[in-house]
Amino acid sequence: MSKLKEFLKGTDLILFFSCLIASAFGSLMVYSATRNEALESGIPLGRECLIMVVSAFIGIILCVLISVFDYNSIERIALIVGLICLLLILSLFVWGEAPEDRPNARCWLPIIKSAAITVYFQPSELAKIGFLVTFSAHLEKVRHDMNKLLNVILLSLHALIPIGLIILTDDLGSAIVFGFMFVGMMFAAGLKFRYFGVAALALTAMIPVIWTKFLSNFHRQRILAIYYPEALTESVYNARIYQQQRAVNAIGAGGLFGDGLFKGTYTQSAAGIPVNESDMVFSVVGEELGLVGGIFLLILLGFICIRIIRTARLSHNVSGAIICYGTAFMLASQIIMNIGMCLKLLPCIGITLPFISAGGSANLCVYLAIGLVMSVYRFNKNGDTENLNLYGFLTQYAE
Image 1 (tube, rainbow, N blue to C red):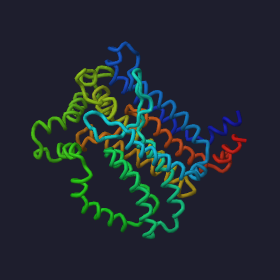
Image 2: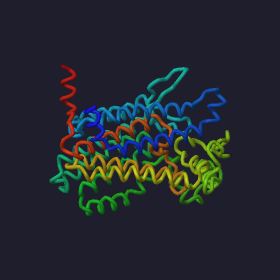
Image 3: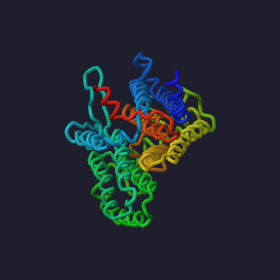
Image 4: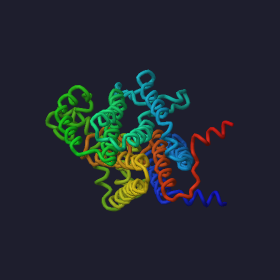
C-alpha cells in the first residue's frame, strides 16, 4: 500500500485521466464511424476501432511503466533510441508499403501480413518520440552555448536528418509536425530571435525549390485546391476537394447539438466521408455531437496541452522542460492541422487527431510521449519520490 501511495503521489493523475477520457471519446467516435461496416460483417467492432482500442491499451501500460523511470536515465540511452528510430525509417525504403492511390508514400511497415489479418506500423510516429528524447538530450548538453553558430548548425542537422528522410517517404504531414517540434523546442530552449529571422528568410527564398522539387504533384494539387482552385481543372479540383467538402458538409449539418450519436447522415452512410475514422474524425464529432461536442473536444485537448506545459515549468533541468514543450508542440500542431483540414482551412496532408483518430501507431506512440511527460512530473514534483534509475533497474534485473 505504501508503494501504491508513493506511486500515486508522484503521478499527474489529472493529465493521465484527461488522456484516458480523450481516448475513450475517440474510441466512441471511431466506433460510430465504422459501426455500419462492422454490423454488415457481423462483428461487434470494426477493424480500425479494435486496433485503436488495443494499441491505446498497450500504450497506456507503457505510459505507466515509463513514468516510473527517471527521464534523465532514459536520455542516457538517447543514442540507442535515435539509432533504432533511424533504422526503422530507413527500413521503409526497403520494406515500406504505400496505398494504391499514392504509390510514392512508403510510410507503413508491414508487421503482420497474412490472408487473415494485416497489421502495419508507421515508424514516423515512433520517430517523433525518439526525437523528443534525443533532441532534449542534445539541448541539455549545449544548454550554456546553444546560441553559438556551430551548435545551432548541429542542432539543425539533428532535426533535418529525420525530416529529410520522412519527406523522401512522401509523409509530408509527419515532416511538418517534426518541423513544428523543432522550432518549438528551440524557442523554448532560448534560441535568439535572430536565428529564427534568418531561418524564415531562408525558408521563404526556398519556397520555389520546395514547391517544384520536394512536393509531389498530388500535394501541390491539394494545396491549390484550398488556396488557388482556379489553377486546377474542374475534374482535378473536385477529386482533391471531395473529402474535405464532405467533411465540411457533415460538420455544418450537425448544427449546435448534432444529429445524435450513431445518427449522422454522412457518418453512417456507405458513401459518406472517406477516412472519417482517421484523418476526418472531427467531422464525426461535428455531425453527431454538433458544435457543443466539438467545443468540448477542443477544450479537452487544449487542457491536455496546457497541463503538459505546466509540467515543463516544474522541470529543474533543460531536458525535462524540452521533452514537455516538444510533446505540447507535437500535439498542438497535429490538432490545428487536423481540424484545419476538416474545416477546409488547411490542405489535406494526412494528419491524425491525437487520442481521437484511428491508427495503432499513433495511439500507442502518443502514450509513450505522455509517459515521458509524467516522468518529468514525477521527478520534479518533490524530492522524496523514489528514483527508479533505468540503467540500474535493468542491471539489477539482469543479475
